[in-house]
Amino acid sequence: MNRGFYQALTVSALTALLAACSQSGADRPVIPSATGQAGAHGISGSYGDLVYVSTAKAIQVLTYPDMKIVQSLPAPYAYSAICSDPNNGNIYIAAGTEVVVYAHGGTQPTAILNPPTGASSLNACAVDPTTGNLVVTSLEGGLGNAALLLYQGGQGDPTVIATKQLDWYWYPTFDDKGNLFTTCWTKHGQFHFDELPAGKTKFISIKVVVGFSVNKIQWDGTYLAFEEFYGHGTSKVFQLQVSGRVGAIVSQETYAGVGESSNFWIYKGKLFNALGKIKAKNNQGVGAWSYPAGGEPVERAYGVTRGASDKIIDLTVSVAPGR
Image (cartoon, helix red, strand yellow):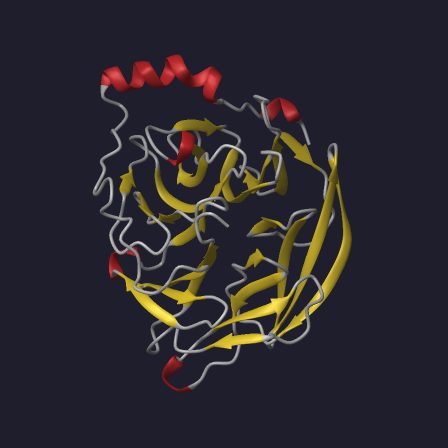
C-alpha cells in the first residue's frame, strides 16, 4: 500500500492548529454535565468489577462474576459504542454526537466531551493504559470522511488525527506500551490495519492476510484479537502477532453459542460477548468464554435485552478502581 497517501496529525503537530481553530470558533468546548462527586456515587453494594452492555434501548450494568443486572443507564445512550479505562474503570459512551463519561459504578455522568465542529457519528473508542488518553473514532471527522479524536487524559478538547484518504476508521485499541492500532478502510474500499506507534507522528500500515474485513479488535496482553462470525452461533477468534509492518495469525479457536454482535471484550482470561440463544420475548444475554481456549460459554446471564426491537450493540468490563 502506498504510504504516501497517508498523513497523521498528532498532539505536537496540531497544537497550533487547534488553538487557531478555537479562536475562530471552529471547535466546541467540552461541556461538563457533572463534576466532582456527582458521578462518583456508585451503585449500592457494587464495589467489584462491572460489565457494561450497550443495547438498542439502554446500557445495562451487571456485576461480575455473578452477572446480575444492577442498573440501567438512560435510553439516550442506546445504540452506543462503549469502552473503559483499564486502570480506574471510567466508562466512555460514544453516543453519536458526544462522549458521555461515567465513573465506575456511577449513577450520573461526570462529564460530556464534545467533538470539534464537523466531527460526528462517533462510533468506537479505546483508552491508552499508559497515559489515560482516550481515542474516539468519528465517521465524519471534518478532514476527509473520518478521523480519530484524541482526548488527553480522557478530558478537554480533542486533537484531530485524520487523512483525506480514509473513508473511515472503525475500532481502535491500545497495547500495553501505548501503541495505537485501528481497523480502517481507504477511499478505494480497501480494508487494512494501521498502527500509530507510541511517541510517533505517522501511522504505518500493517500487512495482514485474513480474507475478510475486521470490525472490533482488542489487545489481550500479548496479541491483537479479532473475531469472525460464521452464523448458527459459531465464531472464530484469532490472535494476531504484529512485528514491524507485518501481522501473522498465531492461533484461531472456535467459540460456540455466540450472538452476532461480534463486539467482544477480553478480561482476566475470559472473552465476553453476546449469547446466540435468545429466550422468550427476545431475552438476549451475555456470556463469558474461556480465552483463548473458546468452546462453550462458561458463564451466562439472560435478560439483558427486552422486546423484539432490542439487541446487544457493544460491551466492556469496568475494573474496580485500585485493582
